[in-house]
Length: 133
Image 1 (cartoon, rainbow, N blue to C red):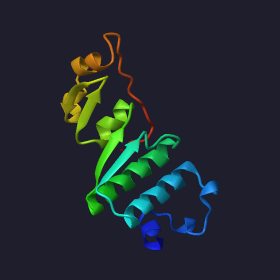
Image 2: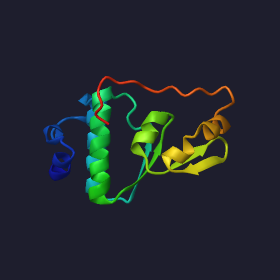
Image 3: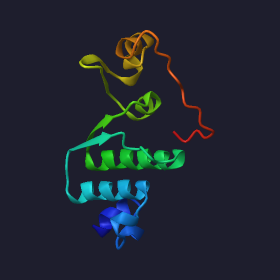
Image 4: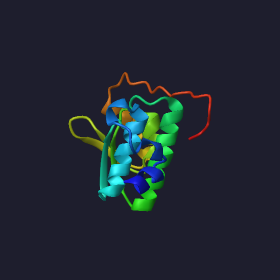
């Protein structure tokens, strides 16, 4: 476990109780667990919830690095379209059934988003002061 914690930059948490950890620290410990108990598929439901912007950037950098190193497939559930555009290679858009699927650029077309949400849909783009993505 010590080596896995080091790989997720959380060695300092080895002797910590999980009750006292922050949201970001818990996410790192869970990723370390996925290294110790190997798996091929990670299912993440709104994974960066509760993280501030910089922690989210670091989380996705770490997740991408681990994905490549351990050859993980990652199924991610998210309502944040900007996050999906930045961090996913394939997208399945659901609303009671499959609306569309493909690359983020293909799926995120105005026509597909209106079909998934409603004709009144307006996309909001998050504007961050840093360009770390």
